[in-house]
Image (cartoon, rainbow, N blue to C red; front, side, top):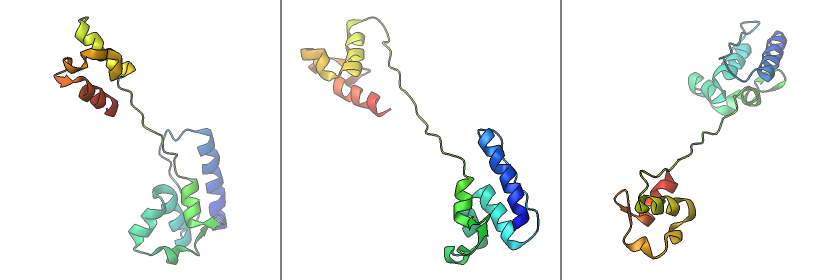
Length: 137
């Protein structure tokens, strides 16, 4: 297991200098069961070890990789999740007063279009329904 430390140190240094651009390949220095578990956990995560081997978590409690528990080891090599954000952009379909009012309602709120709210339709919907659907997207 100690021979695995050098490989993980190299991988950790590589991870800190790269932004997970390429999939890493982990290689154990020996063929012991513990090393195989550590490599599997590094590549696929702790849950993969549990699922693929059909073991329960208590059976893995004593397994260590580089002096830390198997679970902590796998978590330390996990790529950070990046938040996916999207932004909806609403533009006026034309220069008509109705289109401009719909755009204003989205940007400033339904109250901004004043008394015209009851008769105004935006893409075939009431102003408030249109604004809600845009805000949800």
